[in-house]
Structure formats: C-alpha cells, structure tokens
Image (tube, rainbow, N blue to C red; front, side, top):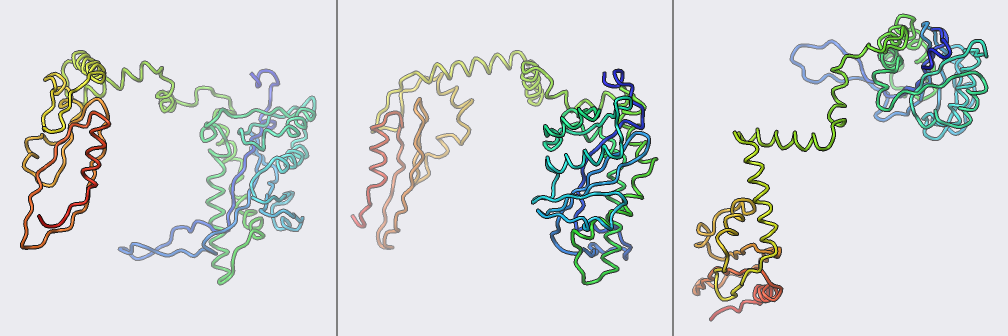
Length: 380
C-alpha cells in the first residue's frame, strides 16, 4: 500500500479538484408573507459564464492558493488581482480545466507544497483527462509527487473536497453574489468579478475544521478502511451478480407477480408452448381465397389464442360492416389497407360485406391489394 511504502504525514497528503463559479448565482431564501407561492429573486442575467476554480488542500487543514481558469484565449495577470493572495490564473476557449492549465497548476502546487526526496507528497485526484497528461506525470515523478487516483464513480464518497469543502464554499459564494447584485442595481456581473467574490467565500469555507472533517469522513486520514457500511455498497450488487442468477431472479419475480403457486410447472408450461410455436412456424396452412375459413388444426388455434392473439374474438366482429379481417399464420400479415370512399347519393344505398382473407402466400397478398386499391364506381 502507498501509505506503508512512503509513510506520508498529514501535512503531505493533498487532494486537488475543480469547481465552477458562475456569474448567475442561485438566489438565497427570503422572508415573505404566508400563502405566497412564488417569490422572485434577483440575478444579474439569465445565462452566465463559467469560471473554473482549482483548489488543493491537505489533511492538516491547510490549503493552496487557488487557480482561476477564464473562458478567454488571452489571459492577463490583472484578472486575478482582486482574488486571494497568491492565486494564479489561466485561460482557454471553454473555461474548463485542460491539460496545459493543469500542468501550470501542478507547478504552482509544487511551489507551496515543497516536495523533496526526504519529504515526498501524496496528491489524490480523480481520473479527469487533464489529470492524465504525460508532462504532468513526468513533472510529478521528477519532483517527488506521488499521484493516486480514485476508482471510477467514487469521488462523491472518497473525495475530501466534495465531502467537506465545496458545499460550504458554494453557499458562501452565492451569498456574496446576492450581496453584490443588491449593492449594484442595474449592473451585470462579469467573469472579472469572480475572483473578488470568491475571495471572501474561500476564506470562510477553507477552514481547518471543514478540511479535516472532509479527510476524516472519507477514511483517508486518519486512515480507516471500514468507514463505509455494507449498505453503501448495495447499488453495485445488482451489476455484480452473474448473468444466470439475474435471469433466475427475474423468472421467480415474474412468477410471484402472477400469484402462481407452482413456479416450476408454470416455467415448464411456458417452455412447452414456446417450443410448440417454433414447430408450428414451419407448418404449411392451406388457404382458400373464396372462403373465410382456413384448414387449421385445433392445437395451433389454441396456442395462438393463448399467447399471440390478444384482441377480441372473431365472433364479436363478424357483424361489423366495412372492415377487413385477417387470420395470422406462418408468414407475417400485411398491415390493413384502408381506402377512403366517397358517400353515395342519398337516394342510393349500397351494402359492403366484410372481406375475410387468409394472408399466407404472396399471390394472395397482391390480389387483396389490387382489390382494395380498385376504384369503386358510383351507382349500379
């Protein structure tokens, strides 16, 4: 284990991560009369810009001056002159952390952490693409910085910044933005105001109490491998099961939902019906175009009515006019084609008898299509 190999002390165990600071804050709670459903909040604009803030803390309760990444290709040093003392900045098109920006932060981090051969530093971080930059890894290797990444999808439980620092920081930052909007009516907040607003929120959130609590609740320092209960690992139990166990559990659950007292008999019955259907699919059925009856065996009709056919019976629809009925067989039936027919004059009446066809052969399909598409002449 990395802790046993290098014997890191709490002042040399660091965690680094990024968070976003936007120019459109989330308004805080206000006091209003009882019964009012909606109370408006003041924001600087509808859609704002994002500035990324990179922060590093150690298990002793200390923090490194932050780095601000602006959504600008050209960065100037005066962008962060109102920020926290010692903070730096950078820029790119998106305003998110990228490889070159993280290399700049690692050099800034080494300036304050002061790693050496006798005083190695452990840096814990997630698996973001910018953190896996080869020049970053080479710089850390040559400057006695040991990189340790979290397992995938575990930063919400294992990262001290997420557990103990970012929550208070976002709350204090929103309060600072609310005060700025009230103090500057009619003005729009820009990305150049972010470092000054984040300065006070940074000092209020980066307290030794919050930082050490984040390392303690994650079990990093003091080291505790049993900090998480077994119930917190339950979401992974569904995907960790073998495929055979999941299929068996699904069958049992389906049988129980149907109030079946004999699950094995039900499963055997379903399998026998499915096997019979597969045998029937290769059976040839005689079709008679001039009649509405097909030469079907009773066993086939029973299975089709039990499993496949879910609509009303043929006897209930035999008296309905102007409809077409199809009987399913080995080949898939064509969809029912409908043709709009103009109404005859009021002094003439016509009766259309229902048409019943057995759609089993291609010739019958074509003949039925030609009959349906044939125009109907008015009059007798």
